[in-house]
Length: 160
Length: 376
Image (tube, rainbow over all chains, first blue to last red; front, side):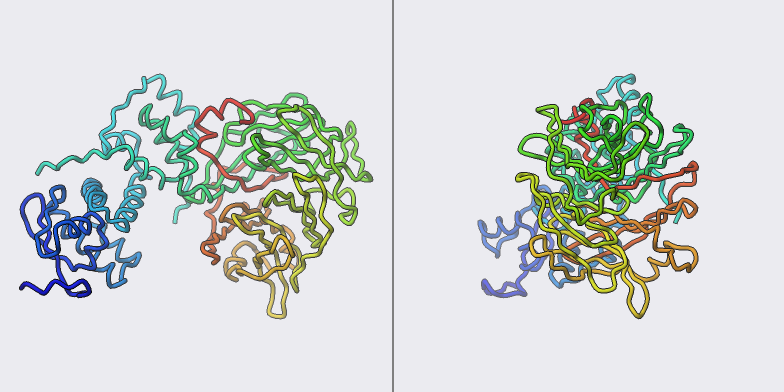
């Protein structure tokens, strides 16, 4: 239902179209938190469906869910834990890239910390695969480095 | 369903890495050569999210057999203890000469002056001996324009195998560019001579070296540029039994045991460095304080010690038999957040003495060119 364009309406919704052609609605105040979206609104106007070529229908609803909570000030540690609980490492990475593209600062920072937390207990080989990085150390170089810093590979956590 | 571009740019990778604790980053530096360069760079170290969370070190010394010495380090960001490589005992040094840890180095102060990096203690570096070799002095490492300098205050004169408790020893400052120790006026006489690091605490804060009497509550500061001591003042909150002065980020803190009609507590005060006025900013939760002790003897607090830096203050019981229980307080936005430090791993040897201190740990020093030089 079209609404009168008004700069102060808080109930105005913006239409966003994902790279795979689906359309989602978001409140204008939530859109403000995503600087890329806001810039597009400033350029194209808020009555037009905003195209987001690099965000897809798998991620956008999750991002909208986050900012729905954010504008009501309800983001808590519990909410954030629940938010990522069922996401695997690759799904979080895709969400992180989307948050980066959208310039959605709060979500971006939260997901960076979450990825770091997930990687903390992973092996070096896993980290290489996760970021698509080639190992260019020779086996001798690598084993020398690991030996020099062997103590850091053996952290002792309390059994709690 | 194939995903779109899922490889992150280097900027994004670096941003994620800056959230990781140091031990994980040391491992991550072995991912590839580019990552090693990034992680060991000084700019990465200065953007690191945990750079204001110093580590807590316990170096255990066995009086007879130095092979039993052990170095433990606690990383508050990963909440884990690490067993570090122990420095080799330098040749011809009795095991229990003055051994001090501060600012990422171990020091031996008598008969010669030696230092080695805590994390990579491969080699002992030496300076010319102090003009007045001494044991148990207060020691600080500070930055003066472009280079590091050492400052040595107080301590007990070491002559051969004898100690002389009468002298008030001059302050000595080492300039690595000149390769020599300069003399400066000794600690004011109000601090009784022969006082050593067991009754004094020190803090480097805003260009001054503060010395504080743990029981006397006397304080004086040495201006590192002008090389003069301030007047001696007393900083004694009501009920304080003993306390320590700590240089945190942006604040000078007093931390100590306080008696009141309702019992004993461990309190923190912020001290104004100009006026030496103080006001309370936090109190350790009572159950946390009790968890550091076994019984209820009158003098149980005597083994309580406190060190700190950056955003953290560590309080611990220097009691071997209880495996040095500790807790840490994080100061965030002016508020105090207390928690227990996990128990030391049980692979602890028997020690006669423990050297405990707090120090920042720099990736750049561990991984970069810093690992091959003493000072840089």
